Length: 307
Image: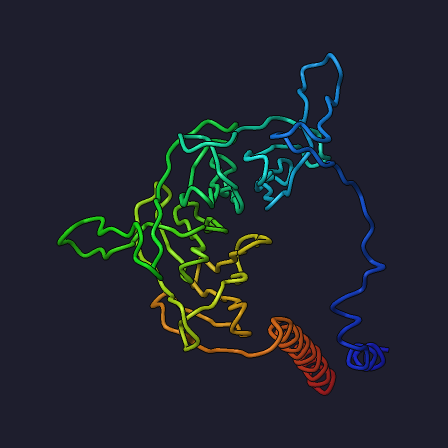
């Protein structure tokens, strides 16, 4: 029986094991089109109740993040320049933001992340070239960043003069993703147009950066996503970091490869082709380890029977 199960596992097509659309069932969906700037499509969801016109509706939602409890969900409503908060069933709780440049306002917010305690929300305020930090109810805490275009040098400044930092450190050109490691102490931002990743502490103090425009190892041409093991990933400009070993996988979109970095920020490897190759390799490795343990267990049982 055991031999038959192992044989069946090895003969099962890998694509079937990895992807089986029939296993997934839609549980819930919510939202509809509402352009707040023109009032197009916006409705009052509860009439004379406490909700307002447009609550729970969207115009180009850019990213979504769950808190660690899985009970609270945050969405960047990018073209409406706000963040909306829901429970896990899609019931509207609150919102914050509007178009502008002052604290708590946005110009096309995209990526967002929640720290592991669910207390702090980080938002990539893309066209304002900054990261904003809020509490879980939308109260503004702090912000950092300003415009710097490496391709022209426009807006780039040296943040500490003759100190160790360099021109452009802590600045952005349209940040699209922001993510927090599992300790809640480190924040990574995808500085997409400058083709680099920047790392900060949770209060926005610059720590380090890596990447530049190009086709060589350690260079990028539009970061499509970052992956690893340890925290949840995201969609646009996604970041997924192994906080224990600090291994970062970067999908280098226009260069058609995946690059792998360590804490020392040196490139470990570069893989051309589909990102799914990494997943397939992982599944094969896990399968091999399972089979090895089963065989070892059978051998141990045989030895005990002989004794």
